[in-house]
Image (cartoon, rainbow, N blue to C red; front, side):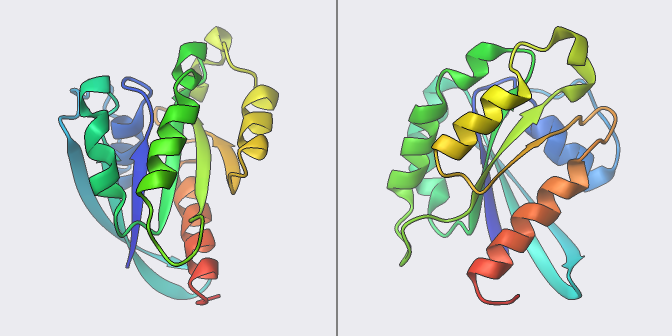
Length: 173
């Protein structure tokens, strides 16, 4: 069982992405997350069955103080931003700092990947893939993926990648 915490500004598509992954259906009229939503999904990665606890954390400023308590016990993190809103990267350092300070495991850093959402709105792109990739690299994140909850593009890949990273870190693969 691995605990994954989704974090990032409000409105970037965290809940929509998680719902698409859980149900396979795009639901574009998600309501604002209050505090945190919690989901469990079982999947097979490299021949091993694992369960993912997916914690979808609210992105509004007024809930940010809660993040440290939800990070406890996490095996991985996913920072999400909106490719159409450059301002969704503005608080990246703050989010990452809160996430890293709250993690109190034996090892310094757990796997965190950066995910750019709303790729289906490519024509409105405000954040280049290269800029986001460089930010992820500079911050020593474990990966970078862009996706679309609407089309389903790369949704499964995100969870397989973070799952594989967590399994490798725990010595399962």
